[in-house]
Length: 279
Image (cartoon, rainbow, N blue to C red; front, side):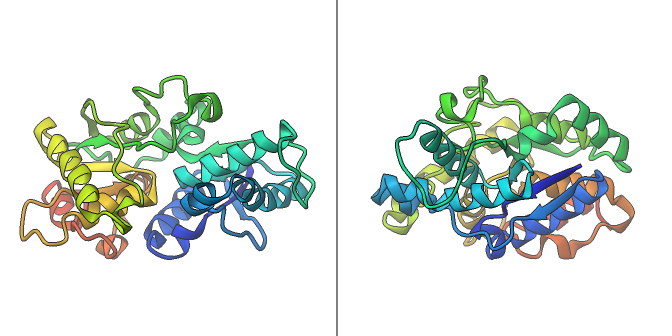
C-alpha cells in the first residue's frame, strides 16, 4: 500500500519527533509513505485569516502534485488536513480557480482516522510486542481535526474516538473525559499569551482530575501548546505524547529509546520507566 505523504511545515521543525515516529510506525505496518515532491506550505492559520483565495490556492498546489502521483494523501497535522479538504471543496464547487489541475479524484485522509479503520487496528494489534499496560491517558483531538463536520466528515465530532481506538490498540488505558475537542488556543498565544495559558492550563488540570498520567494528541500545535505550558514547572509534569510515539513504543519494546522523546518539555521518560515501558 502506498500513500502520498504531506508532512506540513511543523514536521520539518518543532514536530520533527512526530515525523520520526510516523515513519517508524508506517514502516512497521508495511505502508509506504511517498512524500509529495516539492510540497509547499498549506497556509495554515495565516492564509485563511487574511485571504480566502490564498487559503484555497496554497493547498491546491499539493493536491495537484498528489494527483499526478495517483495517490491518496495522508496528513498527520489537523490544520493541514483541514486546509487541504477546504481547498478541494472550494475547487470542486468552482468557487475559486487555481493555477493547477485539481480534479478531486484523490482522497485526503486524517492520519488518525485512516489508522483507526477496523482493518488497520487489526494490523496494529498484530504488531504490538509490549502492550502499554498501566499507562493511563486521555486523548485530545483539538478543533481542526473534527470541525466543521460537513467538511471533515466526522460524525462523532462531539466525542471522536479515533485516537482512543489507537491508544487502546497500543495497550494503554484510555480514560473518558469531556474536553476532547475543547480549544487549546491554537496560535493565539503569539498575540495573547494570557489567553493561551488560561486555555491550556484548564485542559491540563481537567486531564489530571480525570486521573490521566499523560495526554495523547495528533496535532503538532496542540502538542506544543500543552507541552510549553509546563516549561516553568519543577514537578507535576503531564507528558504529551503524539499517538505514533505510543504505537512505536508498543511495536519496538526492546529497542525503545529515551532519545525518541528528547524534544519533549514535559519529560515522559521517568513515567515510562516507572511503568516498565522503557529501559
